[in-house]
Image (cartoon, rainbow, N blue to C red):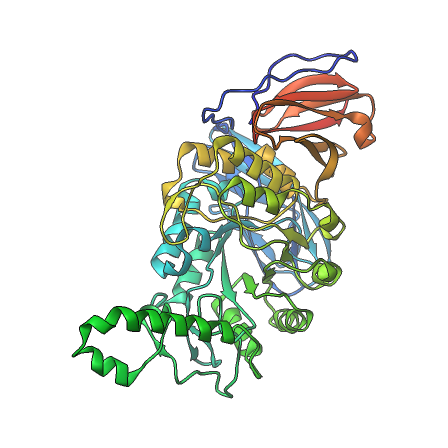
Length: 538
């Protein structure tokens, strides 16, 4: 991340922004104590579907919430700021949100769109995978939900609490659906608790017979959806294959145990790979009914390669459920399906699983311009979950990304209008990571109602410029240095088709830099970024 100096010019000579040293620097200013309304400016809900929206407000507590011109069927809780109800009539409803505390008041226009599309801005929230992997359980998810509130992340628009692979038990219950394992003894209670906090609950499944971790999926070879030859291990975390003769002999020949264990693990992997295929019997309808009953708001549907028939089947049942669930498919979508996925889903993974290193993050985020035409309100290219903070996939540790790389990661994902799903331990957020996640001017780039994906507009060596138009006519611009030494990165207004004079604002520092003629230039640290917003000078 490059530091931005105060040198500005109205002449043809470009401004030079000096680079900082490689120390960790918190750039995000503290929000004021007066109320400020954050989060998306537009929200989509289908006619007759349950409406739930948490107004995101920073400032000194307590805060009193209000909304003027809410459509019929919707109400706001003045204490919690939750908008709820059902709206029957399709249309666009412009509402004025209001937040008041003892230091002042704030108002903001907010549009509720009742129609076919939901998730009109990229989903923001948390997912269990990058921190817990298969070790996820109800206690950890509950803690994450409360941490979203306690850390103030909810007040900046972070709202989803998503359970990834590892919650599944056996098929059963009133719908003969996937029931939770003993690690999730009360998913209904979890859902109620998440919703009471003004948050939303997400869940994971696969159209395969088994998930990547080896749990049951939404199809099976048996008519009852069960695999009788599989014995559940502790919390059904992995399959344990029973070899009775071998097991009995191990009691007398304990030295065979290591060999037998290796053979069992190899067999388990062989069987698991074979089960990563579609079963003859589908249980999608049953599973969706169960998720609807629990009050699920988000589905991650995971398999490779992503295929149209299975995507269409799930979409049909989600639409028939009467509940709005964000539909995200994973992973590594084929570009030839981009047009269809943009019509059938809300988000689709454009890469494989990303790790917390510069090479993996760069591969997932940069060079995705060909996907840009398919990105828009309600439909997003997904380069994978964020790898900021404490991650580790079951073995928690700090991210391996440097400070500059983390600024680049967050800036790029916001410019791409990508879903923002944290994968860290929210109970261990340090001040630096919290600053990365609570800069409302940076988040506004991601949540802009146009939903445009930034594309590369200039490149010189390892210096690259990505830019996207914003709803108000301004442009969000990222000056990136993908090289190993500091370098100057320049954007010319002509590259964007802009007027000669532009007012430029540093988004991370939330500071106006002045008016620049012809171009803007910054000296950017290795693997760093300068993120600005340019608007025409009156």
